[in-house]
Image (cartoon, rainbow, N blue to C red):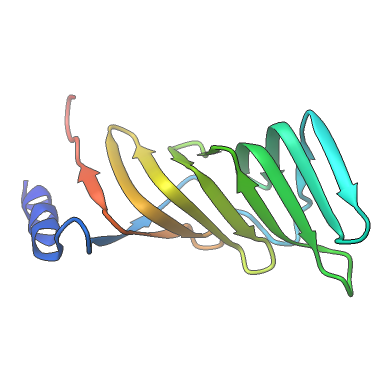
Length: 159
């Protein structure tokens, strides 16, 4: 009960428009050195821009990380040819063993190990849910920060 009171006091003090919260995601890890696997209905490659665009039922996997979306644009490092960034759009779903998150779009900085979900972010952890405008996840530590119109529903015990 003290946890609920402290959480509501935090939300009341910051107000919904200014709220920010830090979260730990327990079921995710991604090593930037692990291979990135992408499956989709179609792929187009533009040699001039060096972009690869996957569309339709796109699923991205790296280690324990699993994302699905309507479209993923892959950006490469010109010098090494390694994938640097994935721009994900068309409704993003991010699933681990213990959490689920949805957003309008996301950017995955592979070399930095950072995933940023934006637009109508909804994170479900068990019976609890958190929504925000933006969520930034450090994939090495599992630490996440949500900001912009943060709202939290804490469900405890038998719900």
